[in-house]
Image 1 (cartoon, helix red, strand yellow):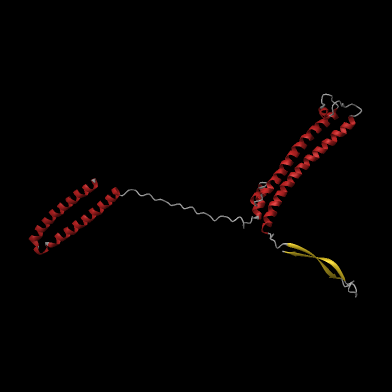
Image 2 (tube, rainbow, N blue to C red; image 1 turned 60 degrees about the vertical axis):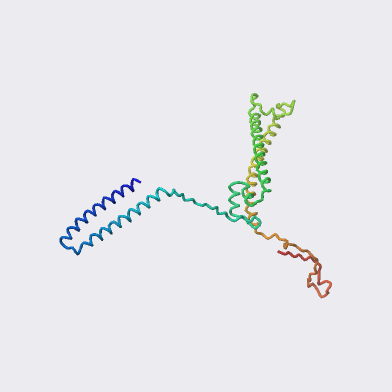
Length: 256
């Protein structure tokens, strides 16, 4: 509103100034050239019309700024739903199944949607870990017992926990127990190492199974695959006798 008042005062000031200048100019022109008195009046009218139009435009802008509320732009975010995967016709990627199985055992079977294989794979790993820990513990115990029986020190007798109740080691049987402890130490060490190789084998089988399963996912296993076995007569061309020139055999037909 202050802006409108200032414009109105300015308008009135300019109007009075132009009126006064116009009157003075008219009086001067009437004295010199009376026929040209209409020209300043027209210029004053044009100037006033321009000032009036500018004032109206400014007032309209101010009214819009005061009356119109702020409008916020609302972005309509629509979710673009991707088409659902048809699991009936979906085929796994062999390369992806291979890399998943290499990174995490069993991940390839999950990717191939063969969940029933997971207990077999992880059961194999758990069994190998248990066998590895058990054989390693027994190997350490028998190794220490073998070292104690070989040093002939009575203060180191950890081998006594492997003896039966009432049995003692003396000069008559010490050589036999040395051989027993040595054989058992070697046996548990061999079983411990075998457990490690079996674990590696289970891991390799899980990787191979994931890759082969994904590779054979597109293999035709429809009902048209069938093997038909039927008796047949096979000519052998062995002689002129027709009974000897033919033999009985089996004909196998594989439809695929």
